[in-house]
Every structure is written in structure tokens, then in C-alpha cells.
Image 1 (cartoon, one colour):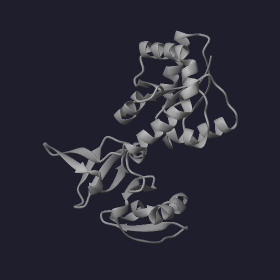
Image 2 (image 1 turned 60 degrees about the vertical axis):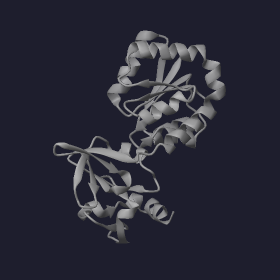
Image 3 (image 1 turned 90 degrees about the horizontal axis):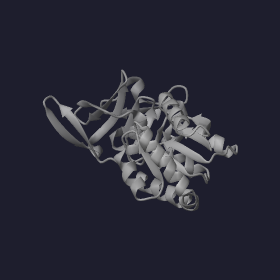
Image 4 (image 1 turned 90 degrees about the vertical axis):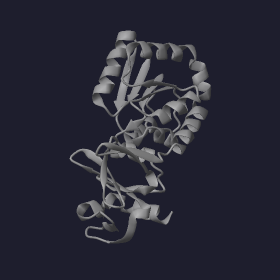
Length: 251
């Protein structure tokens, strides 16, 4: 059986490969991919497999974006480290999922399920992916739980001016300038927040459209955003994001 692994964590991909070989030595991992872009290119090039193992969050987006761009008629077992939204979505459909860290018993059971219901997966895959993508996309995060001293506060997403990363820590920033660390990467936040409300203007900042006061031209074909509590390089829209940013502002 030929398998493709789509996973942005190298150790997780290697661990999964090792377990698959322990369960069934006839399983061949054809290739591994760590981004939406690389996966789409591979499928467009005609790569084939009997089964896919697909992480939900990849280096450049969520894996559902792959199936929005290309038709993949291969049974899929999704994997996730934490996302209860995705878990609820998969429970509505017949596509299987595994919760990380993946144990060998769970993996064995998933493979047995795949073998037993292979034809069923094949016939319902396209519909399941579409429904799951819609359901997942609809589950945008509407609040964040943060710690303030000895207290725990709840902040509505609409109250967030922007998210920013500093020294590998992601912070949530609100109107009065207070900032709180949150246990999410920028990539995870992009997939959890409403795309019409938040835009990642550069590698370090994810900005609420309501927090923008003015946008002006800047050097090297970039844009400068005037927003409360945002300055310096943090306020610059990177050149590769300028076109999408303009579309976002006008949508």
C-alpha cells in the first residue's frame, strides 16, 4: 500500500512513518509534504497513493485549502494536535482523524477501518471534504482566555486590535495597549479568525480591519498602516502581501 504524508513537523512525519512500517511492512511512504503549496503541486503533477495522512495545520495554511484547489480522490486520515473544531467537524463525516500524539493502537485501528470501508471512503470522499471544509471554516474563534496577573479574563475577538509575535511569543493587543501572551502561532490564528476581519500584513502582525486608521504608500512598493499601538516595521505591509491586502480592504 502506498501512502503520502502531509505534515509540517518533520519529527511527527518520521514518527508516523516508523509506526506504519511497524504495523505493516508492505506500506510504502511515497513522499511527505509540509505545505499546502507543495501538496497542490504534487497532486497536480499526478502523484498517486492509496491513502493520505494529512495534518490540519501546515506551514502555509490549513490543509483543507489543498482540496479546495485540486480534486483528490484518495481516502484520507486527518491528524490534529489540538483542534476541537476540526474534531467536531470530522465526527459529522465518515473521514477518520487521529489526535496527536498518535499511538500505535489508534493508528492500527484507523488502518483497519480504512481497509474495511475503503470503497465507502472512495464514494463519499469529495462530499465529506466539502462539508468538513465548510464546517471548519464556519468555526471562527470569537473569544480568547488570557491571564492578567492572578486573574483570568475573557477577551472578545472583536476587541483585539492586532496579534504580534516577539521572541517567538504571540501576543494579543487590545485598545488600551495592554498585551497578553496567547498559546497560538500566527499560522494557527490565521485559520481560526474570520478572514474578512483579520489580515496578516507581515510575518509578525495579524491586524484587525477595525484597528486601521489610515494606509499610505511606503518605500519599495510597500504600504504603511497607521494603527494604535502599532509602529515601525510592525506597521509595514510586506511587498508580497500588498496586492492581497488591497483586495481585503476593498472587500
